Length: 455
Image 1 (cartoon, helix red, strand yellow):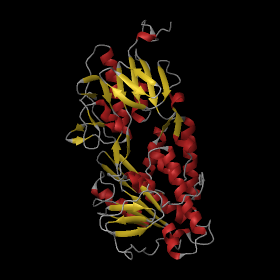
Image 2 (cartoon, one colour):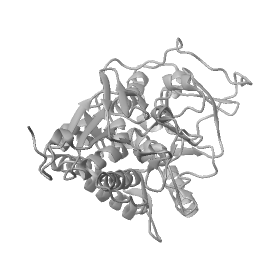
Image 3 (cartoon, one colour):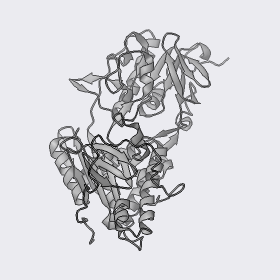
Image 4 (cartoon, helix red, strand yellow):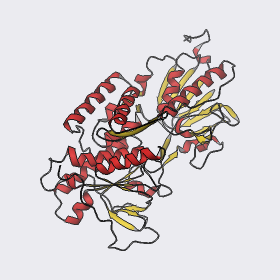
């Protein structure tokens, strides 16, 4: 019979902790329970942890998927009390204390739910066929395929109107992901592939960043938002503020009642909590996030904890943000409270420590706010670079990413420009959702003079 290293209790009699999700929150919780007198089962539908803040770098051909993903089993291989299972939770039965999967039920004494968030198309799920989001490695590879396919199609296009549409990229949503995507897309055409094609000038590409509010990066200080907008415009990105997308189909997007012909549309506008949160049977907010107690347990079920992007928790009158540091901190806090509760001790309230916010816009360009300091330009970009390297799992990943970024910085090159699968073609067979008021056929947003085309 196996004996726990931390007590004389037989291992199969120790409290069983089930963790759903191997993202930042779930993985941090599992690692924090490494020396606790509990048995841990981590369940995830993927066998790898993804460093989501760098997914856009895979999508824009700067990094390979293996540079930012790491096998979950390898991360937890030295923790004898942790078992990893590949599978997907379908339902949580809090009364019976079991997690239901296709392969069977998994009983638990304590449950930690960290299944994160997914894309939200604001009631228009059909838009996903033409405007993919960016949450998984598969998403990033699909975005990369569409972006690189656009240049390949442009190389053999003789119709001027179709050529303009092929070289038009629309990013919906000007949060950090949208801003980073837009800046990277502009750099690809104006720097990376500027000399790779013969039938057209890649520097004539057009990148539109569409945002429904009055500024980019809404969570940042207004002054930094203005600087970010100026840096985007210097890169040639057209920033459309207080503009809402009313429809997306295989021909492009409608911004209000104006049609923008575009072959490539990318979605960075909204997220929704994992639908698994609603199966717990406790109150949720409008986005589906679970309302948690101060110690991150759910009302009426002190043995169930919800963390990361799936939790809804206010602190000092403001919601805890859905960012990686908050997920890591909440995962560790919930793990500590599970260990305390298993030992018969009182739990402690969670308090998020805001370490600041950073966003990169392009080569040596970015914005950030750390404490009372507001940074922009090269300094913000450099700090962003160092922070992301520090948070990557595995020394190999850090070394590879450092070398890749250094090469990209000095050579203006992106070495992962591989189209996996066939060249992507928009399919009119996908379901369409016409706008309430169809725009006139001649109503289009005309491209402005390309910025930087003479460089």
